[in-house]
Amino acid sequence: MGLKKLISSTLIFCTSLAWAGDGKLIGTAGLNQLEGSGGGGIVPWATLSGYDTRDEISANAFITQVNLEDYRLNVLGASVSLYDRAEFSVARHVFDLTTLGGEIAQTVYGAKFKLYGDVIYSDWPQLSAGVQYKDLEDTAVANLVGSKDTSGTDVYLAATKVHLGAVGGYNLVWNLTGRLTKANQLGLLGFGGPQNSDYELMLEGSLGLLFSRHFAAGVEYRQKPDNLDLGEDDWIDVFVTYIPSKKVNFTLAWADLGSIAGATGQKGLYFSVGGQLW
Image (cartoon, rainbow, N blue to C red; front, top):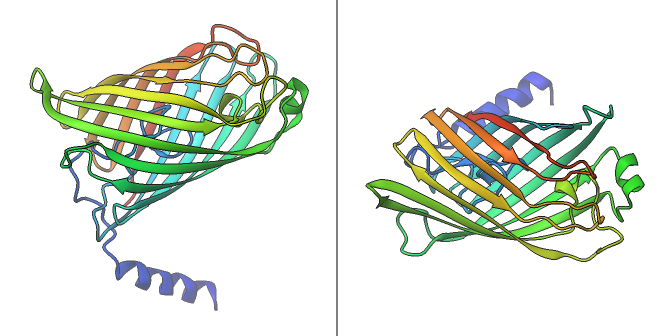
């Protein structure tokens, strides 16, 4: 089949579906977090990344940069949400060692499935289960610091709920995620190490206020394993998000990522731009 014919056939197939994911309230889809999954900035939520309803498909793309004292993380990713039921994502990390020189790259492939509920309309929180497979491309640093593997899989369960008018008339959103992981610094320093090579349960959470349909602010926390005995710290960020439309969102955060590969005091700005392609 020629390229033109293939493109034509694909377009005909796509137009037979309801692509525009616009059935949900603005802001309820959240963002794309660092690993590509729908959620906050550093924590995956139970929400799917698009605004699609049960008969729609949507696609999102995002770009994120985190500037720290000795490092810079660049992330480019995309996700597809299907019928308000499943999400598939991919994200590429390029971790620049701005002080030492060099970079580390990895790709994260994710899948998430909604198990129960809706963040607004169900009495109990929406529940989703997800998986993130991480493939480290530049393995020299991971091997140097003693990691056991250069690829690995995280599995998580997330619960998210929006409470309408709960705080002074403003909507409150919270999320709690439990993650089974071996990853060192998201996997950028490999998986497992001399201290531990087994899966550990890490807790992650988000709490925010939706001041309007377009503005939100909050805080996130992410627990981290210390498999390499390098003093890997838990992560915290404080964020502000502006969502002018379902097509675009902007997030600015102050992030405290603690110690990374023995370099302490890694704090800095997190900036992300994303949005729904269709």
